[in-house]
Image (tube, rainbow, N blue to C red; front, side):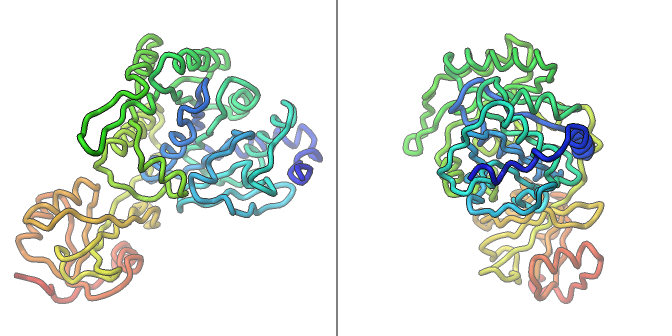
Length: 397
C-alpha cells in the first residue's frame, strides 16, 4: 500500500530542513528539465542529458519527480529494482559507475499502481527525495519534472537552492510552444535561470529515400528562444533507435556517435556545460581503446571485430564508463581517424605495424604494443598504474 512509503512523517520540520541543507550542499549544480506540455519527450531528454554529462567524467544524479507517471526506471531497464534504505535514508539505483537514479517508481509495490496524492503529500515526498537520498557528492543533479507548472516543479525549485538552472523542452508546433511559454513565466516567477531551450522531435529522415520530413513542423523552439533572448540548444530529430532504446531499457548504453540524433544530444550536453560559469567541477578524463576478437585481446588491432573503450578519471585512475564499438572497415589511416573522433588517447594492442603506429602518433594517440593477454579492465588498470609491461610486437611489418 502507499502507506508503506510515507517515511518522513515522523521527522520534525527543523530536522527536515537540516537534512535538506546537508544533502544539497554536496551537489554542485541542480538542473531542472521542464516543459509546460506533456508528450514532448522531456524524460528522454533528461535521461540523455544525464548520460551525456556522465560521459564527460562528471558525477551525476537523476531524480524523477513525475510522481504520477515515472518514466526513468523503464528508460534504464530498472523497473524491477528493489529500493535499499531505511526510514531515514534511501539509496539511489546505480545506472553507470558515475550515474545514479531515484524515482517514485522504485517505491511502488506494483508498476500499475497509481499515486493518488494531493499537494502536501507530493511536497513531502519530494523533500524526502532531496534530503534523505544518499546521493553523495554530485557535480550535477538532473531533475526530470512532470509537465506543467504545478506542485512538483514548484517544490523542487524552492528546495534545491543555488546554483540551479532550467532546460526547457518543446516540440516545434505552435500548440506546444504556446504551453511552453507558460513554463518560461514560471521560471522567472521563481527566479530560476533558464539555460536554454531544446526543440525535440524536430524532423524525421526517411531511411529509404533519405528525405527529411518535418512531421511536427520545425523552428518553433528556436523562435521561442529567440523571442525570449534565450540560448537555443538545438533540434533533436525523431529517431526510431531512441524509441526502441527507451522501450527496451537501454537508453544509457553506447550508440553510434556519428548519427544525427547522437550529435544533437552531444550539442545539448556541451551547451549545458557551457551554460554554468563554474567549470571547476568538471573532471579531466581520458579514453583508452583495446581491440578485441570474440571478446579477447586482438593480436593485431586491424583485425579486431570491436574496440572496448574505457573512459577513466585521470585524477583517481577510476574506470567511469566502458563501451564496445564496432569499427569501420580496415583501410590504411581509417582506424586512427575513427578512434581520434571517439576521443581515444591511448590504444593497447598485441601487435601493430610501424606505419600504423606513426599514423596513431599523428592523430595524437599513444600506442602500447606487444601485450599478449588480459581482460580490458586488467590492461587498463595496469596501464594507469604503470605496471603494464609489453613484450615483443607481434605484428611489426
